[in-house]
Length: 125
Image (cartoon, rainbow, N blue to C red; front, side, top):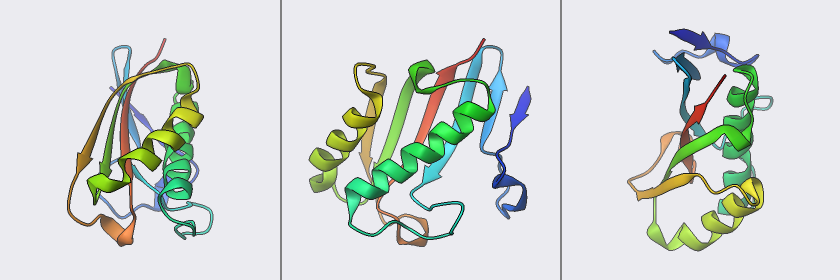
């Protein structure tokens, strides 16, 4: 296995890493909508938060030498199923024609009050 870090992950107090490559598969840990450069959640609701969480996923993909076109599956956690439409809109904008497998999971509140957390699985070569 190969551990993947980003420039922001080395000071993370949690007992996990942003990504792990096993074989040709990259497992991206759940990425919240916190901007790692500022430590802040974007203002404006679910759409800017989804965009930030996906940028955080993309940061881990790039650190592993992959891109969003390599994503096979995403799991998206949101505190309310009523957010699904806006989540889908921001997700579709990010991935464009690429359509990874996906699940959207309504859950209780997320860490730091975020409205979204996204984990991903990707192929790496």
